[in-house]
Image 1: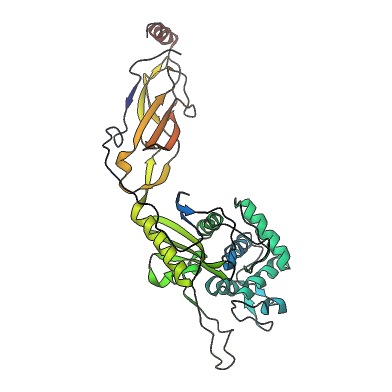
Image 2 (image 1 turned 180 degrees about the horizontal axis):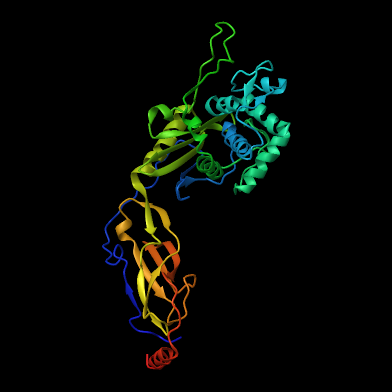
Length: 387
């Protein structure tokens, strides 16, 4: 390949003069949990983790997938929020956490969703499962199909409500991915996960005839105003589990902790992870398709130079204060000879932070370049012979 000297003029002003400064990002705090993950929902970046792929009992966090399947059914108009749901004797007698359903009640899909999401009703979960799939067992198959479709690699469901089963399991990272999908795909239903109480005129105390008021078990909703979800879980074998999500400074984090020994432990663990993420990390646009990153010489074309751009934005999570330490390298696939279209890679932009590659993306011309006249092409061919 011919070597062309002085082929580019770098125009990346924010990276052109690297000024390295010392940025210290501490390790994630030690927390009382068997497994955990802190995920940036915006970028998919795992900020902190421990045994995040380990198979664990998800307990009532299972209900995140139950809700996801119901939300999908609503989206496809297979069911409606105001559909009346028949409550079976099996659903009414399931036990565990409950919204106090009985076969005499006339409840809607919307009420069941709130009873499942806010107060973790096992009876509501089973009623929804039977309404959609006919039986709990058939609904579990739906859950597993959706788990596979959204890329959960270490998850299998046997029921809709989360009681332990030999083949009922998930992992911290799978749970975080599922939570992220609910937040992104179904924003219209997400506010239910921050609702702190639930009551219904239809569900009343037999002694007082007053609506039964029940409370969300996610204590972080009261402790931290930035926390707006999402689900607790507990069985004796699973321990105390929590999915907590919060948004600050245009960054949404999801903390999943499993296997804690008490409700306070899981609350403190999730809070510590969220505080760590918001204190030491930030989202930054590293590459913008509207920015010209270099200019290059064109041979045998109507234009003598082209501007190099990317074709998409790169938005990533980086340690706070480290943006100025990012280094850039631009490689040009030269010589660049017309004709050139805007889909033809003619260079590469690489951004690194310390030893980590943050971005490695092709560069393209910001406009199409046609061939020059025959005499212009002959002239450039002659010049190229001496370069």
